[in-house]
Length: 495
Image 1 (tube, helix red, strand yellow):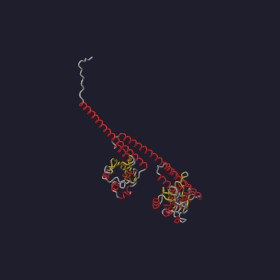
Image 2: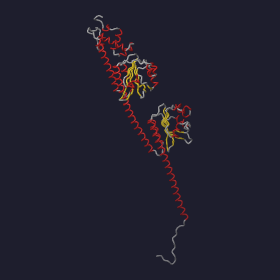
Image 3: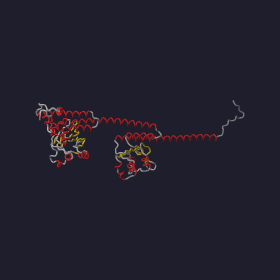
Image 4: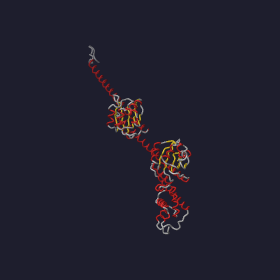
């Protein structure tokens, strides 16, 4: 090259491509992917570029590539200088990635998935790996995929289908879980993979096309919470320095998981407190309505059903009683559509526990909770009322809570959902409280009306007695002669 030549004339075509991409901000992994090289080859090219051009940083590399006057005469650097420069670039890149991860964790919004995705992204980039999986540990060598990045769709589907599964202590992930220390496997294909019978190891090779593996245990205190594993699809073992780096990312993932769990625990505690206060407020309001409704239980039912529908997030809430003909009837409702009322009024639900969940709840005096009405023997048997609710009204999840008076069921509260979403234990307990309050209202009205009836009967008796007394008085006056003044005897003088 002449003294007036360009700096890039010192480089081969491939070296210029690698140098240009690297100076533009691309990582070794991205350059390897775009140019069809391995990250190791990319690093080798960069080492040569740094040595030929005599630069010591990415910034200086970019400036030199843009310099049209040619390289300086003093650019004859040693290979050691080039290695040190690349090491410095790598160190800066690692620090930037770790700083980014720390910012993500400190500014998290409670989304564990987003945080772990970012940790995995930076770990794969810095460690020049193709994909990574964070396994959540459930004890007894049972794990499940918490998050993953870069895996093939078929591998992702496999992890989703198997869900929680057991790992062998001899696998890389199993060793990390049992030994609680980093594990590096040069080539996971070596050593009789298919003879081992390890489902995870076989899937990692067949679906993930993995070769080299690094697995890092994730611990919180003395508790193992997961395994942070990253994979290369070529035989390129992870060295000690890289394992230390992966350990840093695994530690950040632990911090993220624990932070999110604590954040969610606080959220759940606040939500539980708010829910409890709301339930207590609803119960107090219902009791107040009960105290003001001595002769009419309908206002109480209206308040109970409205609160049940809102607090339990249901489509429909209703109170069902038994008619004189032995059929069930909706006597109060909130959110019920006319067709549902018609199904009950048509006599579709007799007091037969074999064909009616409500009858079963009343006769057995216990809660009936149907996670999916479509997945019941009664629906499959084609009982008219049940199939009508499911097929015509779209009702799937159902909760029936009996009203118990003197040890027997006198009716029930029923809550419908148009999707498969079971009720929580707290929601069931709340509806049981509402059912007890409905019984109180019914009994209060019954007793009040019985007292009114007794008072009316006593009043009638008093009136009858008064009339009888008046009648007897008139009779005495009629039968007895009038009183006469005695006559004075002859010959006697009064004094």
